[in-house]
Length: 260
Image 1 (tube, rainbow, N blue to C red):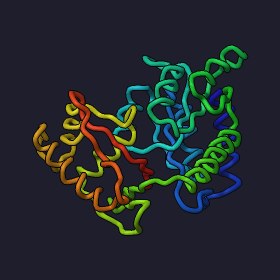
Image 2 (cartoon, rainbow, N blue to C red; image 1 turned 30 degrees about the horizontal axis):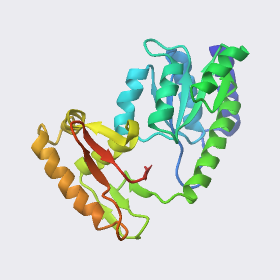
Image 3 (cartoon, rainbow, N blue to C red; image 1 turned 45 degrees about the horizontal axis):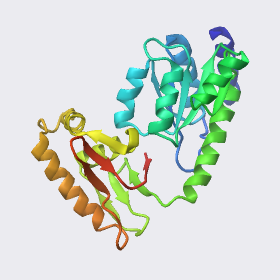
């Protein structure tokens, strides 16, 4: 299986030489690869990176959850057989928590019942191992084109990770965020039902090396300042962008697109 993939990758790099031209005219697709086979994970990561994708490779569902706290992901390339939580379970819950994410399931189980389980769990595309790199690339690009088309018609706010700014669909004015504000908004965007518990937010914000541990009162002050900042960018009569969920934490109430 690994031999098949390695040969195809070597052929691709030999024909293109050292120069790699990205297929993405504006923003590269951000892909999370979940594969427990270290060699295959490295080979797929290398191939997709060569094709211009921004790839985050992990080996389990738990590592994927840690990644999603800080990184916005457009598509998921997911092995079915994983240690701990399997691919079916991961696909099922991410389809609920991040409805827009593209899910490609990779597995050696090619029987019709197995494929049906994958699609029922939320997979968009089901590819059998060994997978040809060109087919995986084509599948991801199909998702990318569809997502770009949908985003053109969506009334979304946009966060730029590069300069830590946010733009409202109601105005072209760019407003800059603090590191903590950016981390909070990105975390809420990736969370199930766009809700995070207070304790989880405090822990998430306290992990940054340049801040002290953040408690409940500090979080309330942060949310209050961020609400005011976002309210000044909202349309007339718009609902608050953030709301408190009694006994739980906070919920994001605006659609946000994350860009590198």
